[in-house]
Amino acid sequence: MSKINDISIQKAPLFFSFLKQIIAFDGSLEIAPELHEKLFITGQCECGQKDCATVYLRLEEEWNPQLIDVYLINTNKGLVIIHLEENGYMEVEALEYDDYPYQAEIKRVLAGDFSAPTDDEYLSLENYFKDIENEEIIKIIIDE
Image (tube, rainbow, N blue to C red):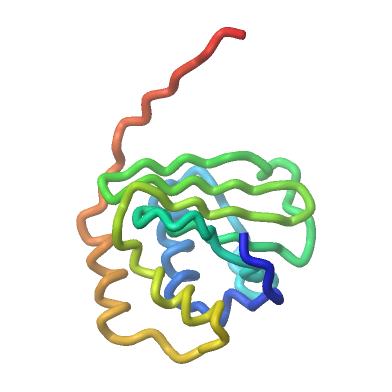
């Protein structure tokens, strides 16, 4: 994980829009609308895999203990795993899709470039959600 100063999620409107839409799509997680005022980007995954667009965040306060969990959102456009952790940390683990629409914006923001997303980036976000579908999740239970 990158070690940088926390950056307000408001500096990454495309990513924040993605996050709100993927949460609404799944429907199993309800986060307060004022989240944008209290959520900060702390880094991104640096694994180097082309199909990884994982972003690390921190809430100014603790998450509601009832929300602390792992939320799997498996779609035809990749797998998004949202980890709400103690101490206000959040991981948006986005895998198995080569072109998550916010990737270029996150790289810019983490480099200190807070320019507005382009029309093409917004179109990419719109196209991502245009024909998104739930995929069946197969859970494997391992006996210990």
